[in-house]
Image (cartoon, rainbow, N blue to C red; front, side, top):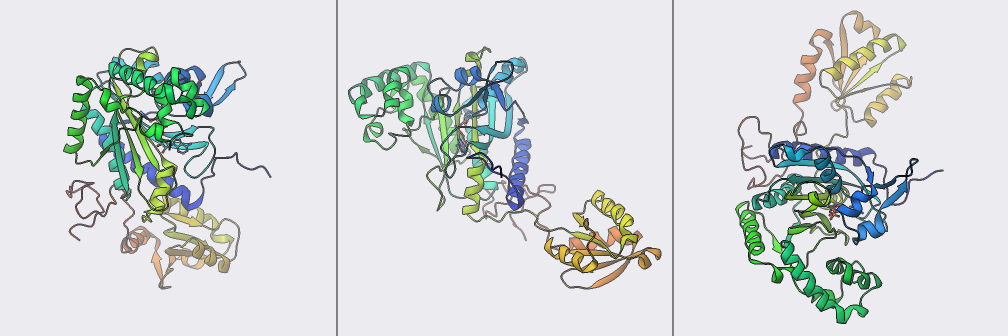
Length: 458
Ligand code: HAM
């Protein structure tokens, strides 16, 4: 038997429904924020990630899936989404449009990591990128997206951590301070850190080997090296976060593992019992300068990405109620082959009219069809037999109460609408499931057309 590669998953059954539900909430939310969906290739020229993500990052030095294609080109499976979006922004000259360009993506990424809980080799990221604005308001807006998303999905235990790396001048000063600090201590750190010292000392701070060492903990802090303009900018970002009532903690050790960041960086941790050590649900920051590195014009940018696997794991641990169907509304069954053709067209008709319908495909007898209907948790059974059809009627059975009725075919849709809507249908709209008494996630807009399920006013 051929098995799936390490660190990859098959997505099946109820698990797959959870993912599709999260996708839908993301799409709805992005529509509200007016961010456009963007899809870039899963593989790109290797050079894009070397130049974009950074030659000295763990991602590029240790984790990329690289290969030569049949045309002898160096290709890499994308380890993250930002570099591809920036490449596309430059290649398609999106900077020509009045900015900012606000994009989102939701797709698979590939990193050759040691597989463990929350760390896969193939994983899915939802991310956003705003290209063409240096306004601190954008930084706060981008941070607000995962905060609101997580809340809408019902996740309560999150912690937002922010920091600032400052502009180029501040980063250069900081770099100098790090080299000075680490040089006399470097032989106590791992081999990779020794290499990082001169190439990119900032990377020492996110070393996975030495992460708990006191030397790292006592290292100089970015905030002490910010120049006035960078300090002022960071203050403004915090003011906007306060304005949006987003709680955060300033974490001066936060530097992130990719090279393109400057000014604001942030991460959101899951504070959920039972969650493993890979508890960072998402992170991002400002990357003014990356567009130029990838041959575009000077462009200020800000973005973030979240790993959907970790997010769904956190939601499961918090035991959120998933608003997903595990049943069908109708199961159409037939007494003999005589009714089979009619059953096919009836199923088609009912589906086209918006019902969730299944039927019998394997030639089972009536008794086995009843069993199959139970397995599928059908709410109503439509039992076709020739006699009834001759009278333009069908037999409908409520699978719970076991009550049966003969219903004229002309009246069928009306009957089903009537009877199925009596059931508790909370799943038809998915816009807000926070059940939060203060309605902080939806702003308590209960006007017509807003499908909030917070149950206020019930
Ligand atoms: P990142 O921190 O490398 O940032 O990844 C973002 C999120 O992707 C992580 O917080 C985590 O939830 C998830 N993730 C990363 N690696 C794995 C893995 N091996 N298995 C499962 N989940 C994983 C970025 O990728 C940046 N591009 C974010 C960004 C966008 N910054 C600006 N714009």
